[in-house]
Length: 113
Length: 110
Image (cartoon, rainbow over all chains, first blue to last red; front, side, top):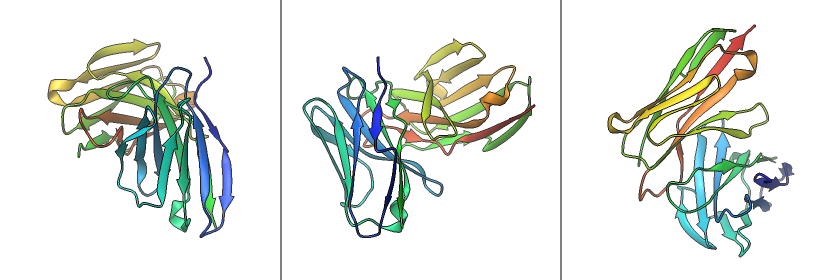
């Protein structure tokens, strides 16, 4: 069974631009979560989607948004990029909502210049 | 929200040595996972262990949910075990999916 896939793997953007990242979960998994990893803040939860509905949201500004499609694929969008948004963005999928094992993709490394 | 503390933050071993990594958490959990982050950044699942004991080759883990801690044991360490080990927990009804500790950076020297 294929793992979680994320595209693109690397991205360089300029401050003020916007970016969209994509995540395809493991087949049959209905929950997708997004995390940001930076050297200073570590791994932080962004949001979780289950059955196309946002179920949880971390403490991030409204510039960070996401959505989930009927095939469980998810996208996250960051508008008006700031230098501090440079990070590794990780997506995870699980079978269901609440207490299920999470499986992570390889991540998208975003650099904002 | 729930707090997760990992210790030690850094660990340096000689190949062949054994080690124990600890994860303390501040509230009851319905999910606890251990991960190894590879040099390219991917989180590799080691254990899904909200309670009890599991073993996988040279690695084993124990979670004592009533005392709110988990231990990861690495025996006969190899240089390929080097990297950062994360503990992550999910609280029932919590507002965050997984809350991560700051990790333990393990270096295994030949």
